[in-house]
Length: 165
Image (tube, rainbow, N blue to C red):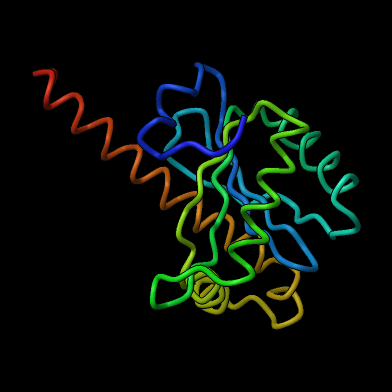
């Protein structure tokens, strides 16, 4: 499966499934996963990138362990909203993953997620060395948390519209 919109995501997740967050870097891939209630993102160990096929195997094995039903991947959009080479590489990564898995992917604007993750790690007094090891997974958590918050809002709006307030 290829990319879907965030509005389609709630209908794709089955009970007992989680959602993964991905911060795709050139050297590492940061991962995060939601809880079963789809409200809280938690970081997972990052993947050191080797080559796509190996990275995909490691990522999909991680997703299987965490019962992932969909993935939210950070789309590195420029500050002016345009897409550059990194965004194109992210879209190509998702197209390649679609050949290996039926997992739906949602693109999520990741502007400033790494900055926010770095600030949070600094506030927690994490050393510079440990921040470097954790930054990608922390950024994946920020990306995923944004998407989870949006899903919560969409579910609340759907309940209000149907009268189930």
